[in-house]
Structures are given as structure tokens and as C-alpha cells.
Image (cartoon, rainbow, N blue to C red; front, side, top):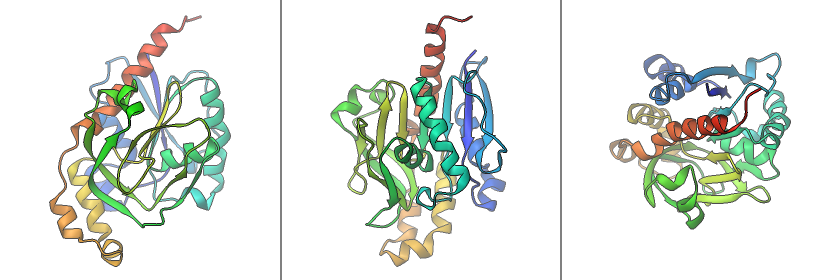
Length: 247
């Protein structure tokens, strides 16, 4: 049976967690239609005493966070060599938002505050030519909508990384770091209600950078293409396990 580990890298806003579920709950819901024998566990990385061995893990899902990768908190820095080892073992990985930025930093790129400021709301993302051929993102339309909420970004992709998607704000909306290692800046686990709640929290910051938060809230829509990536990732991790001889 495929074994997925959600690496929780922080907590959502208290009211969002209460009303809609924290990050790991949103991931679990999006994975609810995965094969019945899929095992999903959660590692609360900021509070973990130690990181688990990778021997029995088929896929890692690294969540978003309100922390900042550039702040180099000890728990976050400890994840970097662990992720490098996971990539060396060709364990399937999907990093989301903070996870995207953390994977890029771990693999030799750089992540920091975006010079153009925050990107929030339901935005259009465009696949690159490589993205249209990619086993994970290739099933998406050439242009699709996704929920975004980030102040930091991948400024420099790691050596050897392949850019799979971009938009006017961010040249590195999705990256592939190896045969089965991906990361995306957007939030496939967010629902429209969660996106609206995040925008409500960000009203002042968005106004300060010249955005219209009420218009952004009104423009929130469902993002089934982006959300479908989580199930597709689970399927790819399961197929890889089936192809691996078991002891």
C-alpha cells in the first residue's frame, strides 16, 4: 500500500483552522479519493523531536506555512538535508508554497521576499512547454487557475531544476527537481472558502501594495485543475511503489 507523509511546516490562522481545517486537514480532504489502501500520516515538523527514517515512505507532501524560509528557523534548516536524502532515494515529493521554497533552497536555489510584493487570490498560471509534457502537471490545461498566498518566492531555481509553470508575477510557479520530485508555489489544497478567508486576513497588506482586496475576494473561484494535482501525485507515488520489488 502506498504510504504518504504530510510534512506540516506550520499552522494556519486560528479561525481558518477552526472553520475549515488546518493545512494537514485540507491535504487529507483533497486526498480522500485516493486508493482505499493509501496510508496518510502527518509529521508536525516545527514540533517534532526528530525526523523519521525514510525507508517506509513512498511520498512526501510538504505544506505551506506562515513562517519564512529565509528566516532559517532550526526546524526548517533540519528539513533540508532530510529532503536532499529523500531526493537521492528518488522518493516522490510535492512541496507546496513554503514547501516549494524550502525544496528550492535545500537543493541549491534561493528563496526570499518577492521584490514585487505579495501575490494572493485566484490567479492564472501557465504551463511551460516542459510542463505540458510533465507526468504530474501535463494533465492540466495549458492555462489554469490556482489559489495563491505568498510573500516569499523562489528567486533562483536550483541547478538542474526544470520550470514547469509561471505567470506574470512569478517565473517559478512550479518546478521539477528530479524524476519524481515537484514543487508548486500555489495551494492545490485550498478551497474557495479558505482562499477568501486568507484574503480577508490580508486586506491591509494588500491595500498597502495597491491591490483591491474586495475585488480579489469577489474573483475567487474553484480551482479543480490545481486541486487535482494532489490525487495525481498520490497515484504516481502508488504506481512507483507497485513497480518496486518488495522484500
